[in-house]
Length: 377
Length: 179
Image 1 (cartoon, rainbow over the protein chains, first blue to last red):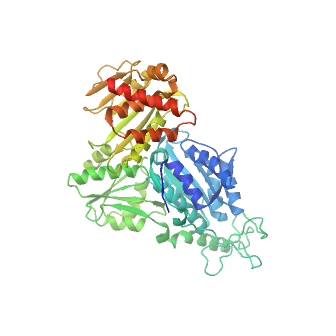
Image 2: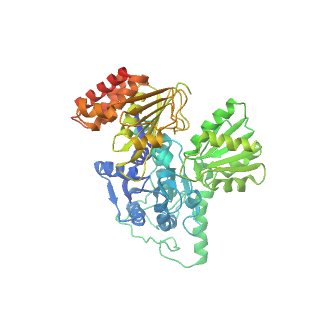
Image 3: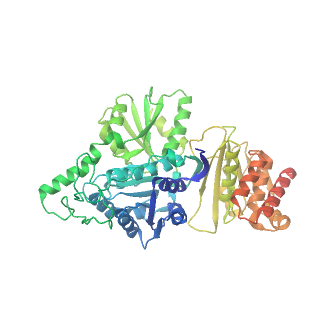
């Protein structure tokens, strides 16, 4: 059970986690600041009999991963802002066709090609609403190298369990910083594998059998013949224009998330027990908040941190509860105001909500956050 | 905070300063300290001004970036002009002796040291200037043990270059004694 101590980048820890979770397929198109994920996958996957394919573009990068997943592989693709935009159509496809796939977005600065080597957190709303139509979304956000490792494993597990794409939304801060990580032994890691039909059983590709959360998933090529489509479909998988059927399917897809919030939502609280003020922050920026809170606590100010680790579905219940206890919530993020909208929505006026943002490619420093906080006081 | 080394290494892309930052941080981990390494760079693979930053601390490190370093090192004029200004009052600036320090930059200690010349003339390869710099920094600060530094270097360098790098490290320690 000897733990391996390593000094890794977040991006490297992502690949270590993916392999631990059982990734056997990676396809993508390299883009800063996510490129190390592709590089390391290219180096490691062939050694374990897996496949790495550098595709012709970002769209093909996710499309190949979806195809690989349908054959039974655990598949991942990684990208950053511009590539995340290009992948949106296929994220919706994977959501409706219920294909497990992990999409990593290492966020960089700005719209368009923006600032390739600088951090940003401008893709939070895109992770939820980027693909058209209502659809289930699971999106996780780490604030350290170790947590990037842990959440990559969790992303694979949730993708398999809920048969849905899972987005790991990191940023250039956690993606590129190197810090100490103890890699646990494989025997200590919980790995979830999709439920498959038994040979000879009745099989309808999109029927949820008794006791199951999602339809059983047959590997393409294993003898079960079924149809996969981005059109509304019935239990066989074939397209159906029936509005009644579409309603049933949509309700089932949305309920996968809505009925399982306790399983999906994780978060970290720091010094909230006696907090009069709350900072809400996530990803790399939460590190700024943690440093700021230590300084403010040393000055005798009762301030705490709420850090969503699952950002979608948003931890509504938890934030609403905290908003009844504190005088003010300050949301710190590297954008012009995205999570703050969610916080305002769920706080419903229980307390004052402010925003501390920055979107010029620099990180938010603890000094800047403390200054913004004191303006609120 | 006083126990914390906040170091900024700057130079031209390709000089191995990010590698040097990683090596120093890995040596700190071997000494059971905490360390975080970050970097900033432009889109270019070579040239330009690149910087690597390392925080080494006895306690846990929340904010991973260096805002005001207490030690900075620059190997090129461009990097010096861009990155050397920010320094704590009691901090240390180390520049290669080919560099003219921008006017008005002050720190408690300013050392102008022939790092690149030492790598070229006494070790025989300019590419090991980063290791000479590491020897110099650790010789001056003792921030990591010499055993851990050597082990960390040996774990990161290409096979067959051990003697070259050991010599570079030794020359760095010698430079530290001379300043």
